[in-house]
Structures are given as C-alpha cells and as structure tokens.
Image 1 (cartoon, rainbow, N blue to C red):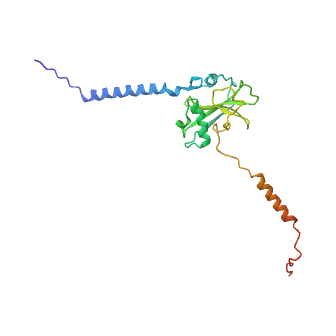
Image 2 (image 1 turned 180 degrees about the vertical axis):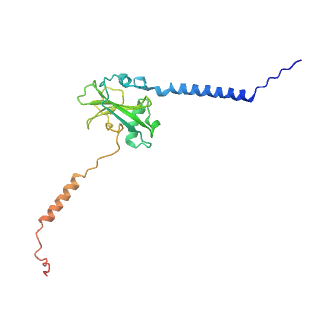
Image 3 (image 1 turned 45 degrees about the vertical axis):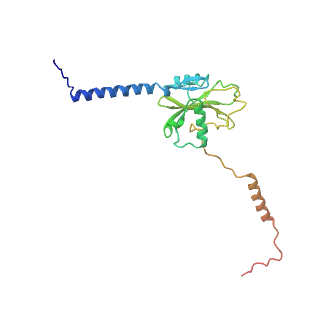
Amino acid sequence: MFIVSLKASKKKIWAAVAIVVILVAGCFLVLNKGGDDTTATCAIGEYNLVVTDNASRIDFLAQFGWETSPEPVEITEVMIPVDFNDTYREYNNIQIAQGLDLSKYAGKTCKRWTYEITNYPGAEKTVRANLLILNDRVIGGDICSVQMDGFLHGFVYEKGMLEQPSSQPATESSGLPSSSEVQSVPEETSSVAVESSTERETLAPDPEMPEAPVD
C-alpha cells in the first residue's frame, strides 16, 4: 500500500487565508453600500436617498410630488450637534417618522441644500424644502414656511397640514432648529418701574424736614 503525503507550505496557507479575508471584506462593503443608506421608508413607501447632483436633488423631492425652483436658493454647511436638546430631538422625531435618524450623524458636518417649493397646496407664502446631505445621501430634511407663523413638516404632505400647521419652528440658516429663545421684559414689571420713578419725581418736599446746613 502506498501513502501519498501532501504538505502545504506556510506561505500558501497564509495566502489562502488572506484571499478569504479580502473576499469577506469585499462582500461586506458591497452589501453595506447597497443597504439601508440608499433607501428609506415613510408614509408613501420606500424612497431613494442617493443624490449626486442638482438634477438628482430635484428628482428626490419629486418623489413626494414637489415641484421646485431649478436651482437651490441657498447652500450652507450644517454641523449636527453631538448632544441634542429638546428642540433638536423634536426635529429628529420628524426625521425618524420618515425613516431617517440624525443621531447617527451626531458631530458630523453636512450640507444643507434649500429649494423653493412652487406647488405647495393653498400656500400663499414662501415654502422651502431643506435637504441635509452627506456623502451623496439625504440624511434629513423638511418642508417649511419661512414666515414667523409658518409650519414645518417632513417630506410628505398630508391633507389638513395648512389648517393645523406643525408646532415645530421653521429651520433657520443653520439648517436645523435653533434652541435660542428671545427673552423680553414683562410689560407689567416695566410699567411698575415707570410709575415708581414718576411718583418719586412728583413728590412735594416735607415742610418739617430741616434744611441742609450751609457752609
């Protein structure tokens, strides 16, 4: 009986292991790139997140039925905070409702592309669409009125939004809601101070008060 013994060299074994590792890593990258970050799901179903140029950004908004200005009216950089305050959390709730989540990008800087909406139902005021984009992907955004008493909601328009506008503040130039609040002096406090000052000015001198000594 003959026994044939085949021995592989260590170099060949390590080469085979390296090839397997490369193949596994390649498959992971391909699956990850074509996974959740290319699409999201909202009330109208699945929609595409990939945007690479102006035409694709307009097409992105067209998925929700929006007609826009041919060019953006504003482009600016936005840094997503590491820690969200209540205002940012409320804004992110809108993103979560449309299949997105800004908390995954906390601390990163993205670009905000703003387009004017030209077919918002029944709106007489200026309405804009804000797209937050990072690495050719839409990671967040909203539809809002730029008026002080305006509205803000996700990409999808639902009947009744104009009658019952969102309580969310419209996005400012930073691309996300600001947490700053303007504090004013209460009118009652101000009027009391004025009345006290006036009263002091009109008081008559006390006749029994001795006069100051004269040198």
